[in-house]
Figure 1 (cartoon, one colour):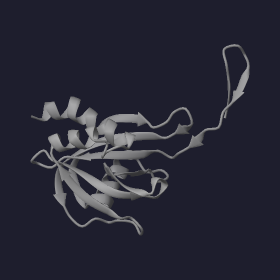
Figure 2: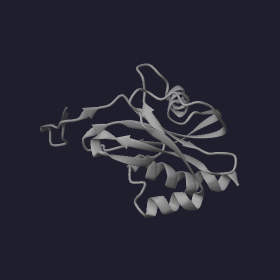
Figure 3: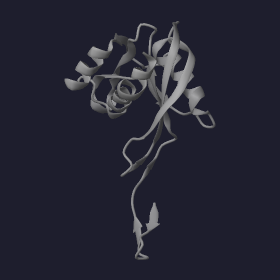
Amino acid sequence: MTYNLETGESVSKEVIAHPGAVVIVPVLPDGRICLIRNYRVAVDREMIELPAGTLEPGEPPLETAHRELIEETGYRSQSIQPMMDLLMSPGILYEHMYVFVATDLELGEPDREVGEEIQNLLVDKKQVIELIQSNAISDSKSVSALLYYLTFVEPKLR
């Protein structure tokens, strides 16, 4: 990608283009959050994170959120609301992440893709904080979305 500085000089930078993604904070009626344990090839380990997934071409983020929630957790939601947006690593990567909070959940069968080794992990607010504090949750999208939810959204739900 080439862009112009205020001085008139042109600068080239490598940028990775990504189609965009969603992250979902699934909140059960008792206030627990459904995280997932998910093996990640890039880091060769199991991660604890929020359900998330890539936008399909032409697919609106809300539709992606419903699809990914079912695929990864089995939960269906009657209410998925936008919560925040994230830019994952804007120095090199264009990946717009749309973060949603999902409530009114009903458990069904997950629709996992071939090769996905995912397990649900239901945790309360205290456990979420402990998992972040101990670095057991270390992926940036999950840390950001969970802290935003606990700070700005959850207090309004009480």
